[in-house]
Image 1 (cartoon, rainbow, N blue to C red):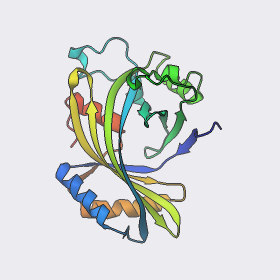
Image 2: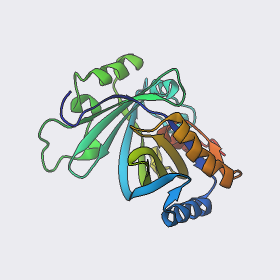
Image 3: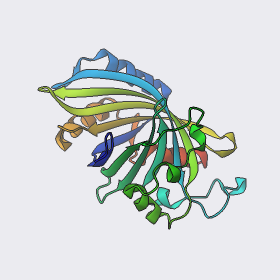
Image 4: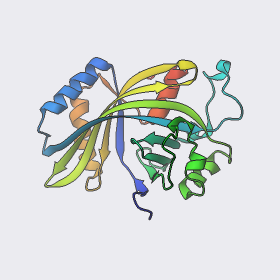
Length: 242
């Protein structure tokens, strides 16, 4: 395994849409005031903003009159290819679905070659970034080996809380404010709760934390397992998610 390269890692996570900004802020305030949830201690919290570029492949140009209907093969498969800028370090992430709707195989590859100091993140192509990388080859198979093109950008302000039990990291909670940016300056915002099993956690841990939120916010959460970029594309096309 190359340094800093994340091998295939089965995740188990629950994703919920949050009804509106008011509920999102209420949940964030609540979590920041708690020392723990049930028998889990909240030991780490961090907040950061990142911009992502997601890619799919298209038969032709994304004409304005077709943007409301066009769906690429990666979106249809539930797979994804994304680039994010960590401030001088660019990371390519590939996620491929499994038979379990709550699990996807995830692969990460930081850049492994020098980039010019004036490199434009928005001009980077995944195919130049990681040519020959096995997970990207799998993505290319799903697209019929067509050229990857940017489908949508996401600006994500994430707030993450790590939950421990007996010194072991069990679950991570993320409250995300997501702005989707599409062609023709179309922008759509939504709010999301993610509850993810970590290395030493189990499905039971995820269920207990999920129950905490669904019991308190019954009418303000909607389970929606689709990835963020697909949610954003649906909103940009004019679909209602709630």
